[in-house]
Image (cartoon, rainbow, N blue to C red; front, side, top):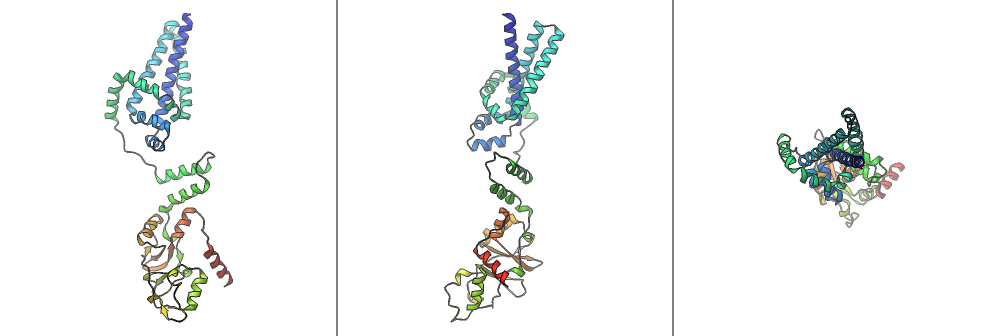
Length: 330
């Protein structure tokens, strides 16, 4: 009967040491920022664990004091009932294998789940060890103050998203992954990478005549916005919208571009980052912006060009197909 009681006590102490060892690894592997994000999304496990993890020095002290107490008690019980050398060997093997290695390997696989499951026990540990844990917490807070919140770098975010592309259990589909990837890479790319060369851009001068044949050409090519430049391609007067020309009778009247209402825009340098271009489009309230290099206009960029860069493929509408047929027939 006495031997059975000793075995039960040793198993209990060994189990307690194992839980403490596993929780130590689990708690320290949890990131506070990640827990906050999950808590905001309503994750019940994160909501239970976050208050404990935020006071990590108190929690860590409580776990380690409990672990040391359990390990010491195990060694004492075995030492009282076994030969001193045998007790040392047995207690060491039991504590290292079943009290450290196994629980740490187990708890490390699902840190949040295990910590949440044992959160009532963690709170009990804090209460029981508080007289010793609180002074240790104050000392640790003094020696190792909390660092500023660390955010993921652009490269780290890219790697995180790349993991979703290969994961079978990801909530993001392939298109969503590509869109996020494209958005993260915008700051690394320049306007010159996506500009439509001026040689392939339909543009007019302020004194260009607008008559029936000219309007037919614009319609046939599917242009909705026409930039207006001077002959030297050093100045942009604005953007002419095709929708403003629809109700005008050009057959019986002589008009030039100067007679039409032009929408203001701004010229942007070819080395501008693509993420900055989005803000430029918003500020200019336009869908088409001329691009310059060395004080000369070299082409244009549309909001559609930026969207295509994010999506990773070309957006083709009916006007694009029409232009392709025209080019093919020329």
